[in-house]
Length: 485
Image (cartoon, rainbow, N blue to C red):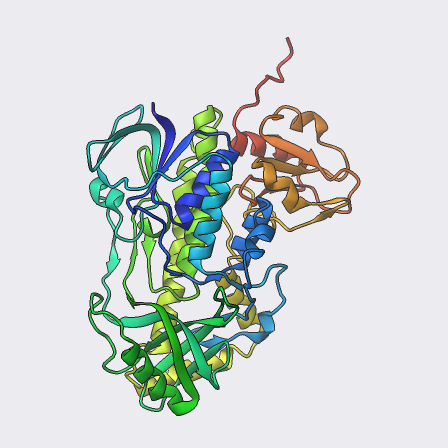
C-alpha cells in the first residue's frame, strides 16, 4: 500500500477528513486536480454544530482569529428567526469557504501533511484488499480505502457508476461577493412588487477592512445558463429593481450562477470507497448547508476509518456512516427545496405561493416553530439512530459542553478519542479495558454520566448495565480479555 486512505478533493470536506485521519494516527494522502487552491469564497456561513466540532478539535479559536467573522441570526426562506439568537454557545457565523480551506490547509501543512495538487483522477479499481487510483499523466496510488470529496461533479462517483437520484436544476440565480454602498442593511431579504428579489449577508471584510457582502438575486427573466458570465451591469440592474437608488455596487469580487438541482447518492459506501460532501449530495446553497453537511460527513467518517485501519472497528462500524449521514443530507435537501419554493426564486408571484408563505411566516412567530427550524439549520438537532436512543434522551445527539472543573468536556475530545464522563467514579474498571480508545474524566463533577464518541455524539448515558455492551458496539473488543485465567 502507498497509503491507508486516499482522499480525493481538497475542499472543506477533504481537508477536514485529512485532519481527522491525522488525529487518528492514520497515514493518508490528499489529492486535488486544481494546481492551486481556489480563491473563490463559495459558501459563506458556518453552523453552530460545525463550530462545536472545530472547538472539539481546538481549531475554532484560531479559525476565528483569521479575520472579522460576524455572527448572525438564523432565517428560513428569508424569514428571520430572532428568537433563536443566542440559543447556542456558538452562533451562526459568516466565514467564507475560502478562509476555511486556507486555514485547514495551513494547519495540515504545519503537521507535515501537504495537498498533492495537479492530481486529476482518471480511473479506479478496487479489490478485497484495497483501491487502485490512476491519474492523468500515468501516476498510480494504492490505498486501503478511498474517500470521494471531489464535489458535485465527482469523478469518483462517475467512475463508480454510483446512483445519484434527484432532479436537475430548473432555474439559475446569481451569487456574488461584493462591496455595496447606500442604504442596505448588512443582512437583508428584499423583494419588489413584480417579483425581483435580493438577499444580502455579511461576509467579513477585505484586506483593507472594508465590509464585504454575499449577494444573491433572481426574479422574472433572470434565470440564464450557468456558463453565461455574470456582469457588473446585471448585478446593478438587479439591485436597482429591488432597491432603486438606495443601493450601489462599489466592487464585484466574484460571481457565479447556481442552480436548484437536488440530488443525493443512493449509497454512501461502495466497498472500500466512500462518498462525502457534495460528491454525496448537492442542492441550492441556502445557509451554506452543503459545506457544513460535508464537514460533518468527514467528522463522522474519519474516526471510523481510523478504527478500521487500526484493526479494532466492529464489523458494522463503517456501515454506520451511510446509516447516520444519509438521513441528515436527505433532511437538508427537503428543507432547502422548501425554502426555494417559499422564496419564489423565479419571481412568479403566484397568489397561492404568496398565501402559503404568508401563512408560514405567521407560524414562524411561534417559539416552538422557530426552535424547530433552528434545530434543523444549526445542525444541533441532528440525532443519529443509535442503540439506546429510544430510552435515553441524550443518546444520538451532540454532546453538551459540560464544565468539568478546570476543563470543558468538548476540550477532552481534542485527542480524537472517545470520552467517558464518570462523575461518581464508578466505571474505572470497565473503562480500563479500552485505554487506547476511550479517556475517562469528570470525576466529582456535577454532571450526568455519558459516553461520547470521537465525533462528539453521545452513544451511552446513565444505565450501568449498558455501558460495556455500548463500548463493544462502538469501540470493538477490548485489548485484553476479562475472562479469568
